[in-house]
Amino acid sequence: MHFDKILEKITSGKKALALLIDPDKHSTETLIHLVNIANTTPQPDVILVGGSIVFNGIEETIATLKEHTSIPIFIFPGNAFQVAKNADGILLLSLISGRNPEFLIGNHVLSAPLIKKHKLEIIPTGYMLINSGTDTSVLYMSNTSPIPYRKNDIAIATALAGEQLGLKMIYLEAGSGAEKPVSNEMISAVKENLKIPIIVGGGIKTKSQLEQVLNAGADIVVIGTAAENTPEIIREFSQTVAEF
Ligand code: 1GP
Image 1 (tube, rainbow, N blue to C red):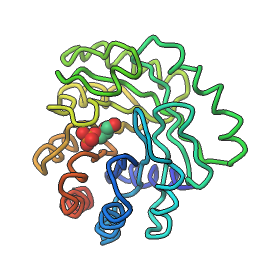
Image 2 (tube, helix red, strand yellow; image 1 turned 180 degrees about the vertical axis):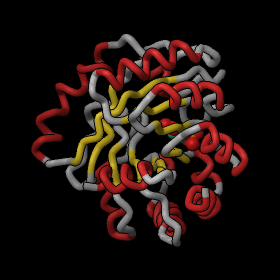
Image 3 (tube, rainbow, N blue to C red; image 1 turned 90 degrees about the horizontal axis):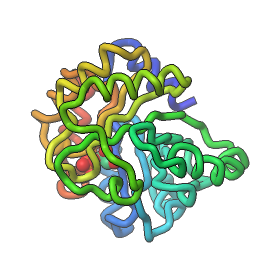
Image 4 (cartoon, protein in one colour; image 1 turned 60 degrees about the vertical axis):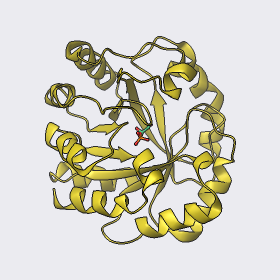
């Protein structure tokens, strides 16, 4: 199983990189260009595909990616429509920072039969939106309030609840294109209190931000917008994570 490999890596003290691809941000040409860069060693550990709202087909994007890479591809679903049979797995996100039942259980009920049918590898993930000072798509689309930027105690308690419910990973999300990433203090505070891995994304644009997030305790870091704008940054980020 792909996630077991990543877990093994994390347990041995290493870090992992996830490359997020929004199907709407690419033509076939730019997608192939991006994935060819990702293919150079060291590679990102996983490619995530999805978005808050998606016009282009997830399945078509995954098919193009699969033709050009052997990096595992997991769905990062914005809603129940984003289930694709050609993915390797799915981050089954439960939006535990919010109180919208549709994103806590509703979409899961709708997508459960297809996820079972396609035999997707499932990583039950507690998804926590952190206010980063920007209006991100996920905030609007999820109709939830994010955890305030400096409220580490709320973040710790929410992440702990996710762990106690049996979720396998906690995702601290500042939102795609966020002005700034989740604070180092919040990442450290959550990390110190959890046994399960934490994945951190949103607003990580520079090597220095990446290093700060890794130093703070992120096990997996997600890069999306920065790679869309400057695909070559994937090489720098992969190298930094591999050498950390
Ligand atoms: C968004 O955490 C991801 O869901 C990645 O964010 O696009 O800002 O890198 P960026």
